[in-house]
Image 1 (cartoon, rainbow, N blue to C red):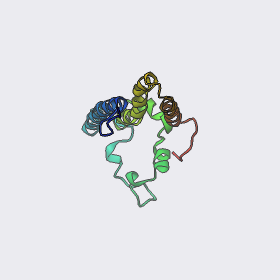
Image 2: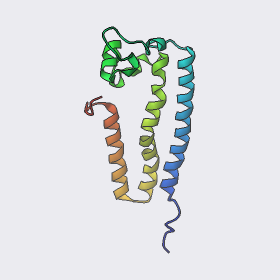
Image 3: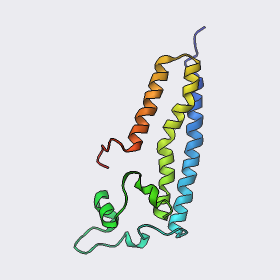
Image 4: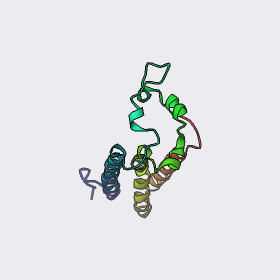
Length: 147
């Protein structure tokens, strides 16, 4: 009996289910943390009213600066350094962003047991490599990409 090509496989459904739930949780986190930021519920690392100011000797407001300049001007930690200022309203939203960014890793980990059970060796190897590459990239160990 041939497999119906128009139906999603078990691993596709599992991946999509985790992705869907994770996306909604991430979106909710982004909305809640944005409201906390703009409402002033939490203090900001960089005051929101300062962002539209033009620094002396420049024609560009702070929010128009290149990321590197902005980070240097306000002594903003880079890489995973944002975790150290997570209690600030303007960096709390990074939690939702990081969660959404890491969602693919979780999806692959969820389908891995299904692939192993199906003895689909090539996809098991691909899933493991995908997780390894994504974790390595997120770790910041390689320090590539100019960020």
